[in-house]
Image 1 (spheres, rainbow, N blue to C red):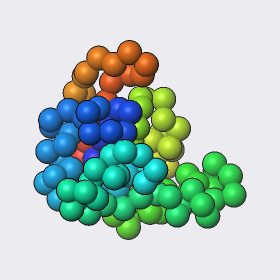
Image 2: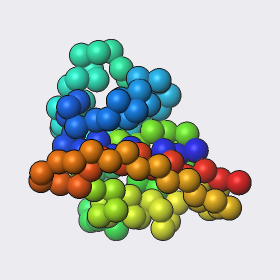
Image 3: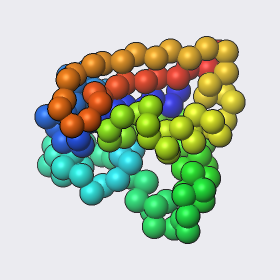
Length: 132
């Protein structure tokens, strides 16, 4: 099951306890980018992660980036994808939801939102999509 975790501003203080617990639990943690304070914090704590930075670098346009991201997560169907900001407005998350493998989203979707109030952006969310 691909899990998409909203990480707020991209720093440890923006995460809910549940969100950080998911990251600490191990598995394939994928940050949208490694150019955020959370990447530094995870490295400091010895928590392994990958980023989509290579996809961003290789893509010539956003359509190609979306294709690369879908392919990337097809090879990592159980990843925890950590995304900054509002998940509902994130175009990469939308592309994954629209173009990802049917198995990610078939049958039912379970959405769990962990709301925290921040002044400049919408709250981090934890969204888990389950198949079957």
